[in-house]
Structures are given as C-alpha cells and as structure tokens.
Image (tube, rainbow, N blue to C red):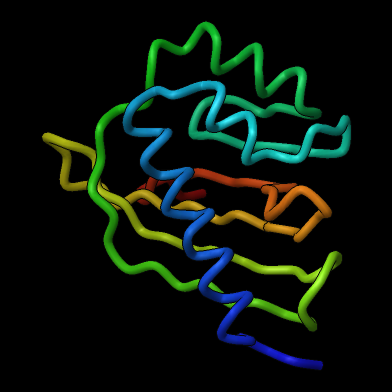
Length: 130
C-alpha cells in the first residue's frame, strides 16, 4: 500500500485548508461541499452528535458560525494509490480565541469522483475526563 503519495497528500491538504477557511468564514455551502453527501457521513462535535449529512446541514444552518480559532499541529496521512477510493486522516489541534484549552479535530477523508470529502469528523476539547 502506498502511504503519503505526494500528489494525493497535496490534494487532501488543500481540501483540509479549504474546509478550515470555510469554517472560519461560516461559508456553509463550502463546508457542505467538502462533506460526503450521504446518510453514512457523521460528525461528533463538542456538544452535538450528528448522524448523516442532513443532520450536519441542519446543525450548520442554526449554528451562527464556529468560534474563531487558530490551528496548532496538523497531521495528515494518505493511504492508497491515486484515483477514487484513496483514504486520508487529518488530525489537528486548535485553540479558540480567548481560551487556553486545546481542541482536537479528526477527519476521515475519501477521494470520490468529485474530489476529497469528509466521511467522518470528531471535534473535542481537552480537559473532559472520567
């Protein structure tokens, strides 16, 4: 298996960066375009659990934008050969404005015929323990 093909890594990194720009601008259509349009696409947020693209879209419509943040360390890894079906993970630390708590974001990306799409995402804030 190929890991971190440079062309695929550049593509998914560009998609990840496009999503971050859309998130900070509250560009809902752009965010929606980067998530796979399917009932199997899920997103766990800091305060919400969303199953399927429709629940994700409804959440975004009523959210009023994401809290502004700055990214820390980002680790993106791509698995597979060029073409449809390649898979990638994107793990990022983030820091919200006026907070010292570190946030964590994990996204699973798949390359479809129409480009890289998030199929699963998880966002959490550090400091919640058992």
